[in-house]
Image 1 (spheres, rainbow, N blue to C red):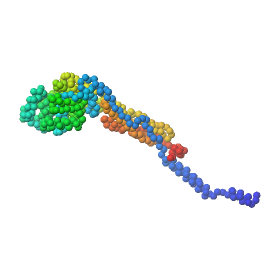
Image 2: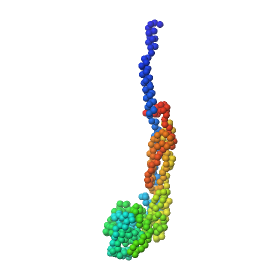
Image 3: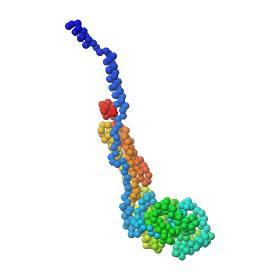
Image 4: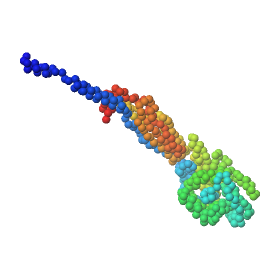
Length: 420
């Protein structure tokens, strides 16, 4: 071998500098270490939660049965419930109100001069003009309880006579005492009517002796709601009897259902030759735990007995109509989440919710899902919110099975799934 060849061979066999090898190794280790730290610190999230159906659901109670109840009646009839706006009627024609007019008179006058429940209110002195009006109503075969001029009577006593035996003389005196003239009284009625949406109402005087006082049955349900919302009114409408001075003695309520049916609230009777026999009746009831008030209006019946019978029958017909509906079932599958392994885990309701709805009422449930954390079954996955006429509530949505947490090895070996 020549000296030049030996020199080239020695040159090829010369080792790489240690510093260069160490730098490459350090870089490699740093890269691996950085990757390891990154995958160890990166959270592995499940895929987005997917709802199984619509996230909002509204249930409305059927109205067909309620409408059928009134459609089966041959004479003007309307029904409804206190805590709802729906009214079901078979006749939109306005008919004479007779003494049901007094309910409007009292509501309008109490709005002008409020009286707290249980109070006697101001004292009124009976005048010669009041005596003349009494004689006028007596000549028309109206209900009157004559007392001499100069007699002092409290508002509570006056309202007792207006509501129980339906005294025309005291209803007229009350309206004139509050408003001064019939014209001012009628202006107040018109204003009250407009503000409360009683569109069919026509009024000409406070007692109902004039057949010009008219409304349809549906609006009488609406008037009944206003009366039932006034505790001063209801303390008289459900009173069966009372005793008054001045030789009047015991007076009885003209509504016979008060003594016959439980939980009756009144409200008002009316009769005249052209109106026939009218009745607004209201009764408290319990529908699967929900307290309700049924309202029945029957107009133009042929006798006292027929009036009572129609009111009784309508209240009974309303009893089975509220519907118990299920809004959420416990364990109901509401959606699913896909885990990092590709497995699908259901999310379910942790509780149930029901509502009692009167015909036409609605209840709504709204689902809001969120991504659950890894862990045992029962991890939070959102809420389902329920709104019904009786209130609102929230029910937790949870995972139906465990969601595994990703191991370090899975993280290390799945960079494409893990890193962006």
